[in-house]
Image (cartoon, rainbow, N blue to C red; front, side, top):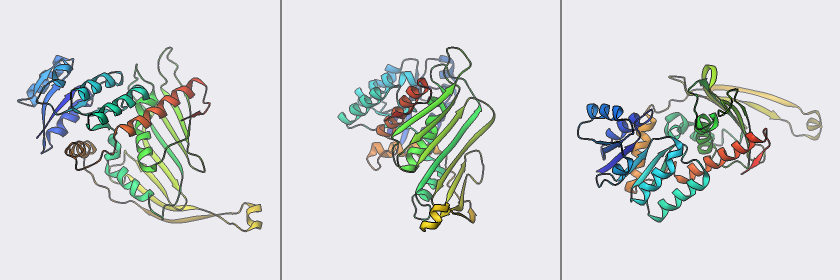
Length: 335
């Protein structure tokens, strides 16, 4: 039985606690949060779980084998490193750290101590994203030409990070997983009409070399909530709408054919191809439950992390480059 300690019982922490509590081979033994009012709620819900306002107390407990960090990003590095140095496996909320240097130190520490380090890229554990991965990696789909996602809503303005670090990290984790390749350059533009506050709207473009491009639109100030991704291949196209209840994935057998004879190339003749529309059934298991079980299996040695430290590092590198590009009015920044 793996003892799990959760640091942070604010927005996401209760979901993490609930899902680890449901795992047959784990037991949440300790919960830490600075707010004693939140901890009183824990005592009412989960009998026998130790609570504390001191994260170091949780990390030092012999009843804790793995630490889950669900706190603001600026605290991730110190808490995760303390846990790793104490010999604990670590699952940390996205993004993994504030800088790529911090992420690299965390990876090195976990490797040195032979510990599991995972980052909570929840969406890659959804049935919909798993199905997209399957569809994209078939001959029928063809080469991916573009990835275009929109994640906007009238959301909570953050004081410590801009909208890219808050929202785009979800789309970047999905993109990195399903495309299985790394961008070469990043361009970002954004705006905030609140003086001294992080950007609330941003547009991120990623260049992969060759003919593949990705674009991500994120915004905290939208009258509509939209969670939609379009992926275009040579032969087929995917629409992923996370707000759909029953048909999250739609596969369109549509595309174009460019004729290749010298005369036709000169005329740039393009024929449009329209085929069937298919909405495959996707597993409806809660993503966080799948991720929690996966984390425990990685600790037991039966699985390898899908969202390990390196995956977290890659996203932080992209976000750092995006911040540089924002300061330079969209000038592409190499990775």
